[in-house]
Image (cartoon, rainbow, N blue to C red; front, side, top):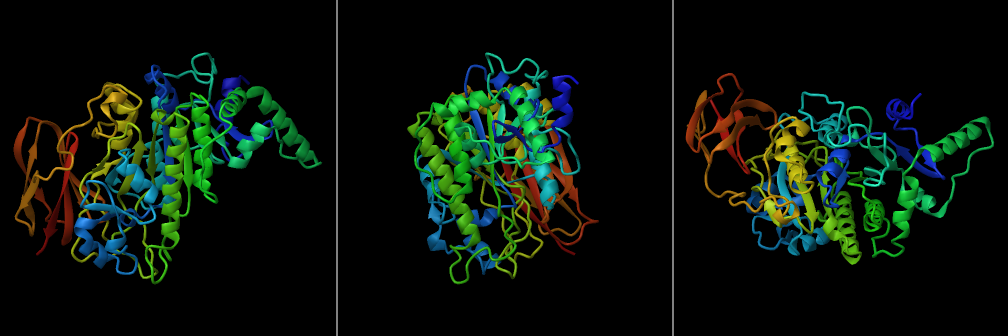
Length: 526
């Protein structure tokens, strides 16, 4: 079997670790995102670090709507953060963050964080496994893709990877995940281009030449042989060790923090000159159905501990990169497979929900709170979800374009649709103009009459021209109808929404036009 075919057909066995000099890793073939990343940015050394918050993070207790605090508190009487304890952000009066996130507060106030409100997708899936798959592949809710969003991107510039690699232009792994299984995000059309470092211990064992012992059995002999073959076939272990050796000293990281341990490795490899384009790290525990807060003090508890670890780990990571003079290479982002419901449950927890905020950070990231605070109902029920403002694939498209410098014409093919461009990264990074006005638009761009309505309502919307999208969602986040999806001349338009067959209740009309979006609450009654 040819080496390329061996990698292609053995890569899916991701749950079985392989070893290099005792370093438990998994080597995979070609990750299309990573290949494209390198090719699209051959004149820079930009790095993207993706931080996965596994379990479904409660976005409403992480990024708190101060301008709707009364509705927020009424919906979450047993878990709401006291208004006086919410951390304020420079220049922001409508939005604050959880009191445990002092590190993110400082980074924001220093001008290096963007918070993005209400990120999701139409008709969200509330299964952990399926929702994670959607976020990693960039698929629609009713679509199953065999490739990852980063994998498709890299395939443009590295269609023959791993044949001919490593080479002088790319001597290093194209993507690295800290964890036992390589993310499906790195899966290309043929093979996966990622490499997994199973743990921090495995990483340091590699550097120190420590080999995990094998049992004196027939199976142990087989394992020893597999390790030997892996040592001979993998070409990246030496480059990882060489990069790490260039950085013997690093800044301080918080103890007993699994995410910080992973980010410390990433910082060392970035600062050591590894040309790896994409890193993924993760932290679990965000499925907070019960005991999310401590009785008597909602600022403490399980969720507070998780957010403190995320915040302090990111702050230590950024500080370390700055001390190593490599912070300008990196943009990072957090994501979770879904958010939580608006209304808390009786177990001082929250149940699976729809849209949630994302954090993007880095020296070139535009300081901002992107979007408006989520629209909350006067009397929230257990079925109410945060309505989506931004499609998560718009975040991907914006980072590919503004950080990895992918041509706009290629984004539709990579992400399989035309997604909104958001001003996340300073235009200096790629020469892309990103400081666009009126992102958090205070003007009313979408109205409907009558409201409430019994069967039909006329929606009036304003567009600056170009691609315009008008959708209607229910409180579960399900896409009810796409009323407009086309290029428009600038102006004011109307369209009739026929809700005769729909049950009574609240619906959300979402307008998207270029970098701007707005959500309108509509009520159907009899």
